[in-house]
Each structure stands twice: as structure tokens, then as C-alpha cells.
Amino acid sequence: MALVGLALVACSGQVDDPEAAYQRELAAAKDAARGSLPVFWERFTQPEEGDYDFSLKAAFPRRDGQPGVEEAWVENVARAPDRIVGELSVQPRFLGDLKEHAIIDFQESQIVDWAFMGGDQLFGHYTTRVMLPQMDAVQAEWLRPLLSETPAPEKRVD
Image (cartoon, rainbow, N blue to C red; front, side, top):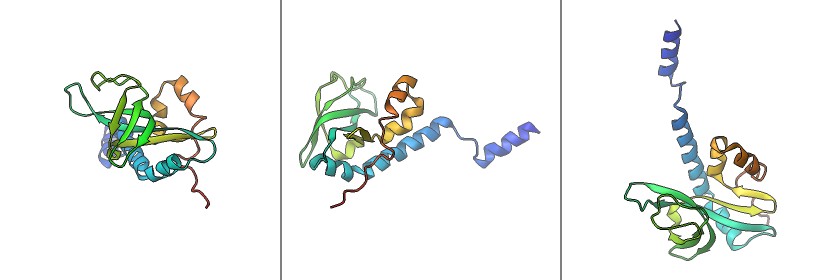
């Protein structure tokens, strides 16, 4: 009987692969981050008092001969009409000879997340919010209180 019940649950779609569910959540977070990118650029170009530490997470083509991308956070961002330039804020694993603090340029279409500090709150980090349960416990507990209640700040009142 138990096997029949498990088979029925499996056929009904109620049993889900945790990794597949995680990947769907991560993809949705990236879509939400890209959809709210105008909020980031508005605060980047006209920061409010207390806004600082603007950074972007972008997908860079791997440079190790393997297919795919490596997603990495970039800080000290500068935006031109045809590209974005910034400094890698982490040590990449698959970007060839690039190291942490290397200057790298990319297109807006490569952005998968964004972040900035607004006072004592960390806005953005859409993907990080999904990744929290899988992070090292110490890192997650340090980060959790910094994250704003919602990823995007409230709209400005002009």
C-alpha cells in the first residue's frame, strides 16, 4: 500500500527534485533582479543619502575551455552607453588568469543581480536571498540581518 501511495504522489507531481526546485527559484530571482534593474540604475545615478557600495552580479563566459558561464560580483562600477566596467570583488574560478580586483567589462544583458547599501539595509541580492538556506551557517547569519525586507527599495516620492 505504501508503494502505491508513493507512486501516486510521484505521478501527481507532488514529489519534486530539490535541486530542480532550487534552480527554478534561482532563475526566478535572476528574472526579478533583471526586471528591477532600472531601480538600481536610478539609485546609482542619483543616490539618496546613505546609498553606497553599488555592485552588480554578471554572468561571464568561462575562459577555461569549458562551456557555460561563471557568475561573479563586480564592484566600483562605471557605466558607459555601450558597456559596463567594474572590478571583480571575488576570486573567480573559471575566468582564466583573471583574479580578484581585476578590471572587467560586460554588457547589461549579462547582469543577473544587483546590490547596494541604503543606510544600514542591503538592497537587491535577489539570488543571495534564494541561496541563504544553502550558505555556510555563519555567513548566512551574518548576512540575514543586513538584507532589506524587500529586495527593491520603495519608490521615491518626488
